[in-house]
Length: 128
Image (cartoon, rainbow, N blue to C red; front, side, top):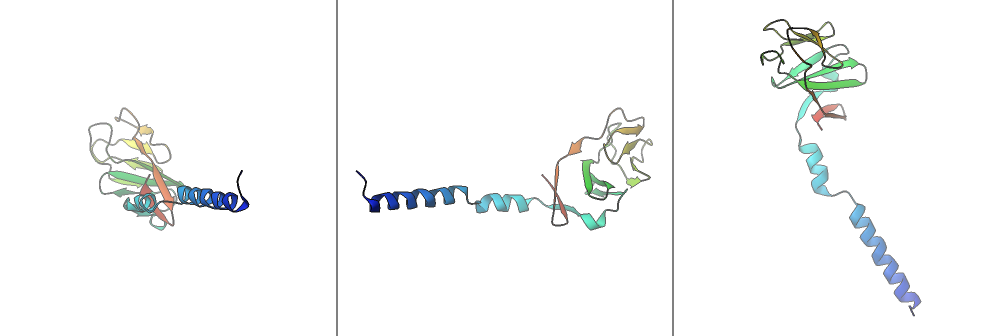
């Protein structure tokens, strides 16, 4: 038979263990912020975009919508050069991609730009 004291002690230990188990771990929090900032939301206007490090293109099709795609054209591997008029534009052979979906709007590109997962938080855009 448990005494009142043993029951209270057991409950306190169980509660403390639960809190420690569910508490955010510093390593997880650091991993979230360890990914470099690709761009700031204020630097990308609605209907436009930004080429980042020649590797990614981040677009803003609507006010609170951001998309990220590979910056490598699916035609012959050139790096896309600009975002204007609602399209991501490749300078090599004139391929154009939709800023919201990455779909081909004008060839010769055979397929859409691969989409990359991003996280937007605190005005910063990072890979997810």
